[in-house]
Amino acid sequence: MITLSVSKTVLLTDPIAPEGEAALARAAHVIRAPDSSPGTIRRLAREADGVITRSKLPDDLFEAAPRLRAVVIHGTGIDLVPLSAAAERGAIVANLPGGNAQSVAEYCVMAMLMLARNMVSIVASLRSGSWDAARALGAGVHEVAAMTLGLVGVGEIGKRAARICRQGLGMRVLGHQRRLDRIGPDAEPVSLEDLLGASDFVVVTCPLTPQTHHLLDARALARMKPTAWLVNVGRGAVVEEQALLAALRGKRIAGAMLDVYEHYRLEPGHPFFALENIVLTPHLAGMTRESRARMGLAAAEEMLRMLAGEAPRNPVHADR
Image 1 (cartoon, rainbow, N blue to C red):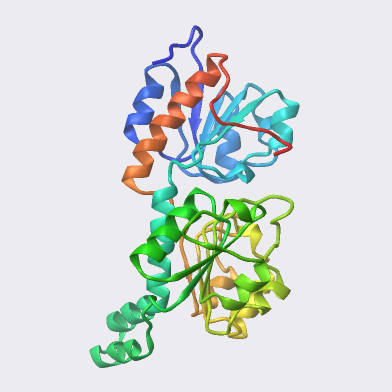
Image 2 (cartoon, rainbow, N blue to C red; image 1 turned 120 degrees about the horizontal axis):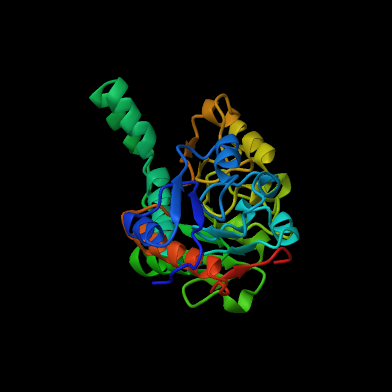
């Protein structure tokens, strides 16, 4: 375990696994944020030397936290940190690629099965209505074995989802990304247009970059089959939110299940809450006990390494 010559303070914007927090506490002073709101993060980061986060950091964080020199993203989402501001202040940013890939891939499979079997509506009907009414909702559900999965982004998460769905469920799997030659053996490389037109499930797992921002806009969503579902576990802004709202309201696609959003947090009264053909979760696809144990310890070790003046294993740069 790395020891620090001078005591440092590390802010946890979100809880991490006990193993990781214990490792941090042996070498640094740990502050736990009671919530991940921007105001709370700004206030508690004022005296922090390092931050470990799974939440979106305020764009003006480095103005509010002049001592801050190290940020570890408890995951892969580089859009959680204002990278240009970090570079200007000389702060180092790192992430943890692959640590929660299995958990997110399993979430994708769960989402497809829930949508195909109309599970949310059936459970709600059984709780609030009658047995017969709930059972009747099962008459129009589907097996997924004969369906096609289209993966937008076939990195570690996509490759695992492709393997589960092709080898385990017997689905046809299509994949699209910038480098089609790196799709892997369990998905057929295709253009985005062909993927959208052929898929019963369009699952977004790609990162947010200038090239993927609003990749799925109104024109792209219009290419989807009216019976298809959209699942987004990548980054919210890959999907143009207003275009998705219009498609769902107009029943131009069957529905969606989202774990990420264009503006990160869903505030009360958001239009998504009024829709019946959408399932919403609060950015937790990668949060399982197993992934948190792996990533909590990895985040702590990376943070202590950076605070000790060593280079991180997975640096993130502003021009990435």
